[in-house]
Image 1: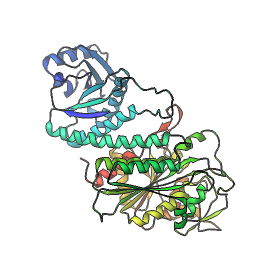
Image 2: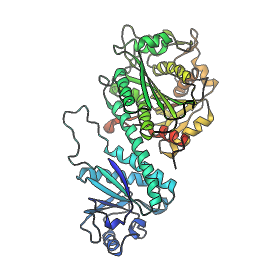
Image 3: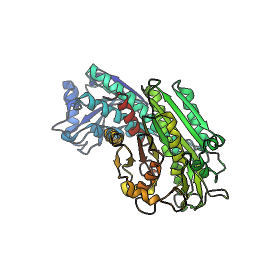
Image 4: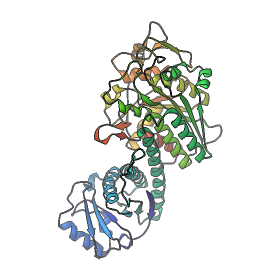
Length: 499
C-alpha cells in the first residue's frame, strides 16, 4: 500500500473514506473538535445515537454527511482518551484497514490525532501504524491456484495533519515503517514457503536477487566444498543427511564508512528440520519449515537497510541446511570438529541448529564486528519459558543486551534476558569431546546459548531465541516476520535515524 501525507482541512479532502478517531461523546478528540461547524454537527448527531460504542477499535461507517467532500466517513473508536497512545492507534487502524480492504475502498485518509503532540510520539505512532496495516493486508498465496484477494484492494492511505513541520516527521516514519513492513513481508514469504521450494539454494538465490537490487548489497554463498576447506565440520555434519546441499549465505550491506566495524546478524537457516536420527514426532512436523525464520529475518532486515540506505555497515550470515534421517546422517554419539577446532559430541541430532550456527559464528570473526547477534528458532524450552509473546535474549555483553531490550520495547517487539553463567555451561561437559551439543532436560534455552557462547569469545554477542515468536500455530498458522522490527529499531537507533 502507498502511504502519503497531506496538510489540509479534513472536511475539504476528496477521498473515498475519511477516518476520524473518536474517544467518546463527551471527549470526542481534536479530530472532531477541529472540524468546521457544519461538519462537526454532522458527527455529533451520529455520535449521539450511540451506534459507535466505546470499545476500542469499534467502527461506524457514515455516508453522505453534510460538510464533507469525502464519499464516506469512518468513525474509529480509540478507547479512553487518558490512556490513548500510538500503539492503540495502530491497533485500531489495523481493524479499519481490514474493513476497508474488504469493502472495495481503494483509498482512505486518516486525520492524525493531535493528541499525539510530540514528534517522537507522532513518529512511533505512524511507524507502528504502517507495520500494523501491512500485517493486516499480508496474504500468502504463492502456492494457491486460486488467489483469494479482494478484487479492489485498499491501495492508498493518506495521513492528514495541519502542521507542516509535523508532516516531515510523519513522512520519515512512513518511510521507516514501510521498509520494516516490507522486510517482515519478505521474512514471512520465505518462512511460509514449503521446504520443497524454499531450500538452502532458494535462500541463496533470494540473497543474490537482493544483491542485484542495490549497489550497497553484495551477496555470496559458500558451497559445501568451500565450507569443507574452512573446516566447518559441525555445519556440514548436519547437511549429510540431506540431498539438498548446504549453503553459507553472506549478504554484505555497506552503507557506512569503509573502516567502520559492522554489525553482524547470523540467522539460523534450517529449511526443514525432521530432527535427524533423533526424529521428531509426526504431529505438527510440517511446522518445521519455519526453522529458517532466523535466516529469513536476517534477509528481511538487510533488505530494509538497503531500502532506507542506512549509514552503517551490516553483514548478514545465514547457515542453511536441512536436517533429515539418512544412512549418512549424524548419529547420537558421533563427534564432529567445528571450524573453531572444538570437538562436539552429538547426543541429540535434533539439536542441530547450534551446530550450523557455531561455525557461522566463528566465520563472523573475519569481519571484525562491532557486535554479533544471532537469531534462531533454537529451543522449545524458550516457548515453555516465555510463550509466544516474548523473544528470549542471552549474551556476553550487558550494553548490547540492554540495547536490544530497549529496541524491542520501543517498537513493541519485546525480548527478555535470561541468565547465563558457568553453572549452566557445565551441563555441556562431555566425557569424550570438548563439549556436548545438549545439556540435559533443565534450562534448555540457556544451555543452548552457553553452547554458542563457546564460539563468541572474540566479540560482543547476543543471542535471540525466537522459537516462540517467529510463527503462529493453529487457525492463524503462519510466520510473523519477527524479530525484523526489533533488529531494525536497533540499527535505526545506532545510525541516529529515529526521532
